[in-house]
Length: 329
Image (tube, rainbow, N blue to C red; front, side):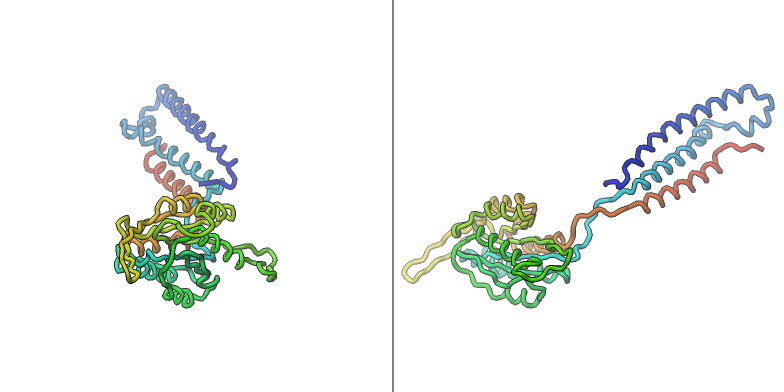
């Protein structure tokens, strides 16, 4: 929580002083009652039991609480909440290396990734734009930045696994794709006061980098400088394998994911890291990602909430005073 006018909170220091003054007045009233000679009037004014004596302190305490809550409201508090984003650009990066045919994720890693990405695209808000980069030994733009969801889903279908893994180059190509789509890029006119909409990269990979020029962490540092978070998903299990058969001999190769590198990329850029050792967990990860990217962390003013609570407390203090404070006959 933060406050627009925090100086108003200084007045809260007056509340304990007011309560202390009330206690002093009550003690003085008790001493005066001892010298009062009209016993019938005195009996109607003074509390008749210890419980009644305690109850007479409740109305001023509730009223003091109401004043405190009202002062907090006057300070214009704002509470942190997740609010929907109006627009953003998301680049989906998919590993299409040869290891994506491993079947440790049913029916295989690539099929599971295609299914999860299709669902992810469908869950993004309508004004979000989507681009796609695929990578194996090289990084390629599958579709440029677009708001055509059908085109994006169609691009997911046309993926063929082959080659190695160039994670760093894929991130670098994604960053260039975002720069090319920014307002004013390529000499296009920029509306007055316009700025680049929020952007994020969602990267799925099932193995360690073994191709490419740019190292993953170097690419992550570039994304960090541009303030573009990278959300990473490590797909597969440590026991994943693929079979290679060139006609003369066949061999089985272990293809475990590289969660350490992907986690470091996410942490470095302010994104989030997920592991997916099954088809269900992969779908859950992308579902969580869609919700996270579709919202932003913002402060929402809650002045009316505090002032309403203060008014309710004032009414409660009045009712308590009517019920429990002594009255003159």
